[in-house]
Image 1 (tube, rainbow, N blue to C red):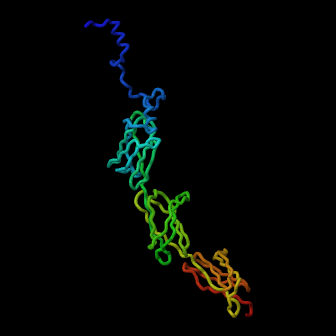
Image 2: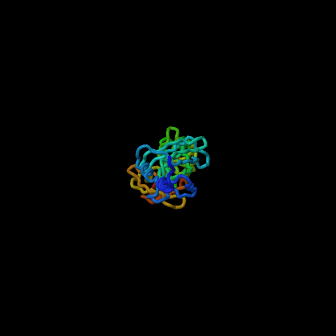
Image 3: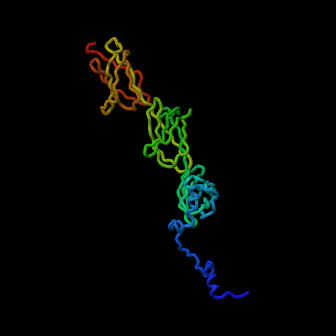
Length: 312
């Protein structure tokens, strides 16, 4: 065959791509996701993934480790990659050392979801370029809170007590009632500082701070003081007949008026939900009478007061 003329060979070279002697790609090139849209070959692919198109081609990998706040791996964690429109693009399970690996369909923004038993799930937005992405995940453990409510006086369990758990902002997180033995339990609480408030019929409400750890169940005991009660009858004169419409005032040791009551037709009065301590009962209707008394957690039943005119 005839050898092509030099001019013809030069023309053929201009028509074909230069495959020999082309410069090697630089390691410091600009990632495709950082280039202008017109010069980015993977932009249609990212849009395709976010729109939930057909089969998802393979692209850059996303790798990392899943650990708890103490730095320990969380094996068998489920890791899911979804598009911004909610389409699942990949799923993997963390290995024994907490390592996971997923493949993104191309450059773009995605949502990475990690979940494991006994831990709070986490969702994060990741931005993937044309190179592998390293992304570690921290999963906080869920904790439990349980305990028993008892009477501070008798030590007996309190059934049907209302237990309320609030966070540091005062938001109610969960509520429940105690069972037959006074026990309560709450699951799936994040670690942190909480307030446990307890109230029950015939008891004074109480609130206690609780520090819940990152793992396991924190157990507490709550003691309720009985709401002390003072009740009796106001009687008049030597006949000791019940005195209606008599005004009875309860004053504490500091001189503060705690409560007031007006007797009914039977002369009865009552003060409830009292703290233990020293009080003074003042009854008026006749010339007033003031009597001191000491109230403990059991209260006082049948504390009658007699009113009389001088000389009766």
